[in-house]
Length: 108
Image 1 (tube, rainbow, N blue to C red):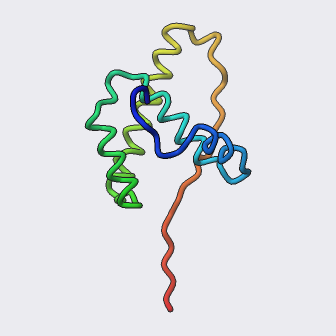
Image 2: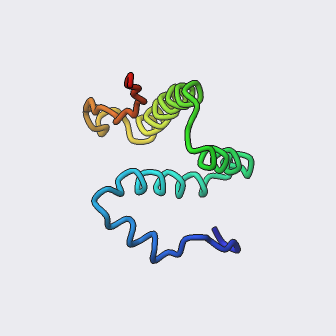
């Protein structure tokens, strides 16, 4: 973020990304990098993300709505790709299971 002081240094982030358990960190940073390049990703969106991080959880209904919106976004990107490249050059679809996080409660 140009012009803003970061709480975590670049070197700390680079070191954290070397850890074998940093897959989710890498995924979030990649998504954030793309979002910050998009003029439609507003200050309000960034503030909403900050509040989710501060809360330490994503409400279930928000997670479900986000998943539905992501599916529509992926479909729009695929449609645009096919329009630009054509169906002949599009790679065959491969079913890939997305990792899902779920909360489990146990009776004590």
